[in-house]
Length: 401
Length: 120
Image (cartoon, rainbow over the protein chains, first blue to last red):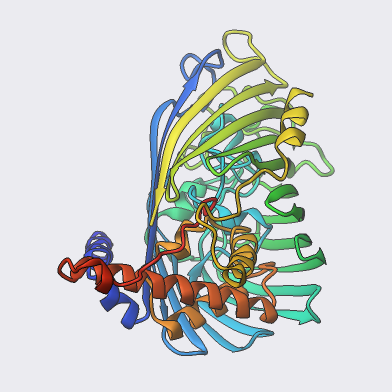
């Protein structure tokens, strides 16, 4: 795997520094981005002395990705993207698209299956704020250990096959669909799994031992009100199992809405995950196992945001997002492989987090931008310092080519 | 409230118009390109892609058009491609002019690359 990663990186770098006309003639397109972000948590919660597996990334974090897209013919294209971020090194994309027609595309390989609207913009060069909305958070949120990240941390590459397509009704209505079967999420490391282990899903080797693949679908309608106004409404669903015996299931459903008026964008998304867990060892849970419905928790998340260009240099973004978790709480660190609780989770049977963000982006060059944002956090439970609120700030720079 | 006032005060002031005005036909094409392509990514992506081959632009735009909820109809690809091809032609002329030895003003190539502010 390490050798493969080195060869891939070398290949991408060679392509990057090849003369541009040569690359264009070969119909290869290299693209990439890198974001360096500094996260400062002005007030608690601290990432020290907090009971349970809580942690917060402060200071510098780096996300980088390199992608090559090849149009092999009118019907066949390939994409490979390597990225380095919250989860270490990963192959975010390695797939072929075979398009028989607009309404039928066959995708085979490793890719993020179609779910929600945000994932298409998950690259830090394609969204205005330093971090992702909470439902899609992958390691940037405060107290991320308590929450085990978002509802569906983005990106979520998996190996499998997807059939999808688009159909335009005239020039005003676009209809998109996707159906897929992929490896899905895992937690093979814990003897009594209580949640998805996202870290394990991103680790090589990209294989799954579960016989039953995760399946899902997405439908979306885009309507144009005028030349400068369009709106998209979408619904997504995914069903899979995550343990070695394929007995513990997860169901993720989502709805999304986006409205664009000229360059002003409003977006809203809602996600819900129903997560079944292993109850064979009741000692690892914070609460007694209920006789009925005691073997799952739900995690809901939503965000609403407005992006407004202010001038040719500045964009401003306002976002409100949050998550709500209901159900029994495991006292095990996810993916630890432990069989006995070592600490007490601070989460309660019902816990929530709400965040309000205001961000400004400045384009120094059209492909080099500065990002700054302030975030106000409210939690339903106190940290070890007794604080339920926190203020954090991001200052970062993102470049793309 | 303050944010709402700020947004409403600034709404519509985003500079889509070139600093150095493009010909009117290119301007209309650019407006469609900017509106459609900025939905998912910054305009720097296509403008700095290094592509200057017309056939490759066609496949590139087709690939983007087929993205879910792209909002790019088949009819939109005509002005988008027209702008990208004009942009590429101007880029090529500019590069050739830079590579050629200095000439007197009368023989200098007329290489004007459209300046596209707001192309983020």
